[in-house]
Image 1 (cartoon, each protein chain N blue to C red):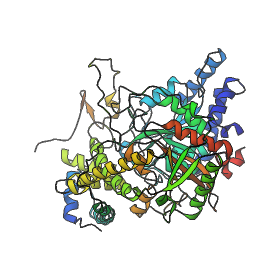
Image 2: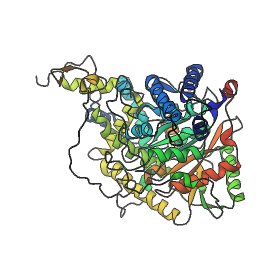
Image 3: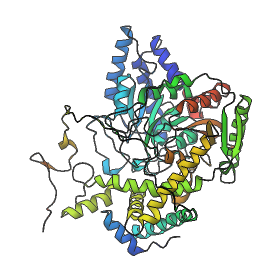
Image 4: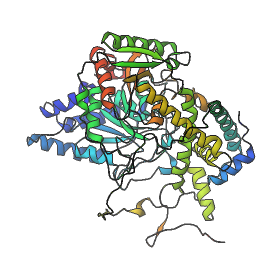
Length: 95
Length: 491
C-alpha cells in the first residue's frame, strides 16, 4: 500500500476538475493506494543513468508545407450542449 | 446462412463470382445481429442506412464488371471510439452518449475507398480503459463461447461480433492489449501493428504514445489483406510513420524453417494457468515440427511493464481527457450554476469510476512532488523495456507468449479488484511500450472449452514476419476454424 492520503486525493481531485461524492472518494483512495503500492516495485530498478522515453519508437518530426486546404463545414451546433448566436453558451464566469 | 462464418477473403471471392450479392450479405449480417445480439450485446449502434447504400454501390460496380479489391463488399464492425461521420461515436461513455462525429477517421476513409461495408459500432470499456467491457457505461458484452464470461477488452464488442457471425471483420484499438487479449478470449485473430503504421486521426485519444488501431479477423490471411487497406502514412497524424508501402499478403504461404522463436520463461511459469501453458507448449511443438528453432529465454520485464503502463497511460489519459469539459460537445451537468461547477460536475457525472480513477492516478503521477518518483521513473523504465526488446530481437525473429495468463473469466470476477484486472494484460503491455507489432492467434482450448491465444511479437515495422509465423501455423492447424455452439444452430 502506498501512503497516498485523503488530503493528497483531495488535491488531485481539484487539479482534475472532478466532483466526486465522499463515499466514492473512500473507495478511490483504497484502490489507488493498492495500485500505487504495486508500482513501488519500480523502485527496485536502478535507473540513475537511463534516459527517459516519451515515445515508443524514435521518429523524426514530420513536417509539411503550411498550405491552406479547404475544410468541410463542421456543424458545431449539432453537438453543442448549448448554442446561441453562433457561440457556445456557458454559465457566468465572473461573480 | 452458413456463409456468415467463412473468411473475409472467401466471401470476397463469392461476391466477385456473383454467387452472392452484397445486399444479400448485408441482409444476412443484420438478420444475424437481430438473432443473437440481444444475448451477445456486441453493438451499441448500427449503420444500416449507409451500409445498404454502400452495398448497392458495390453490387452495381461488380455487375458492371469493375475490378475491386479482395475485401470489397465485406461487412466490417467498428469500435465505438473511431469517428464515423454522421453516426454516434460514444466511447461507451455517458460523456459522449449523444456525440455524432462530424468527420470520418482516416481508417474509415480508407475502408470506404476500398468498398468495405461499415455495419455498426461496437461496445468497449469506457474510453478503452479496461479488459472486459464491464466498464462500458451501457452494458457488458458477452463471450459467444460462454455467455457467462467476458469477451475481453477493451475492444470486446469488436471481437465478439466477429466470432458469432455478426461481422466478417472488425476494427479495434490497442493501448495495452485491447485487441490481442479479446482476440484470445474469443478465439480469433487480432493484430496490433507497429506504432505509426496506421493513422490515429479520428481515434478518440486515450494514451497517445501507446494507442494503435488494428483489425480482428478469422484468419491470418484476412489480417494481412485488411492491413493492406488501413495502413499507411497520413498527413493528418504526425505520428504516422513515413514508410514505403508494404503488401502484407506477401507474408502468406511462406516456409518458416529456421525461424528463431524466443519464449520468455517468465511467461511460461506460475503466473500462467495450466491449460493455457499446455496449449502454448503444444503450439511451440507445432512450430518445431515446421522447422523453427524454439528457445526459452530470460526476459523479466513483464511485471515492470505493467507498473510502467499504469503510470504512463493514465498520465497521458489525464491530459487527453481534459478536453471533456461540457463546453463544446459531450455531457453537460444541468445543475451547475457557474463555470467551475459546470466543469467539475459534468466530468463527475459524465465519466464512469474506472475513467475517473485513471484520471486521478494520471494527475497524481504528474503532479508536483511526485513527477520524478513516478512519471519520470516510468519513462526511464520504458527505455529499459525498449532496450530489452532490442537485445532480444538481435537474437530472435519473433517472441511468443500466451496472449493472456488465463482464458476468458466470468463477468464480475475481476471487477472489484483493479490489480487482478490490470494483470490480465501482463503479456500484451510490453509491445505497446516499445511500439512493436503483436498478434494473437487461436492455439487451443481450455478444459472448459474456452479459446487460448498465442501471442506473436515482432521487431518494429516487421509485421511481415509476425504474419508469416501466424499463417504458417494456421495452415497446419484448425483451431481458427472451430465455432462456438451458438454458431452451429445458425449453420
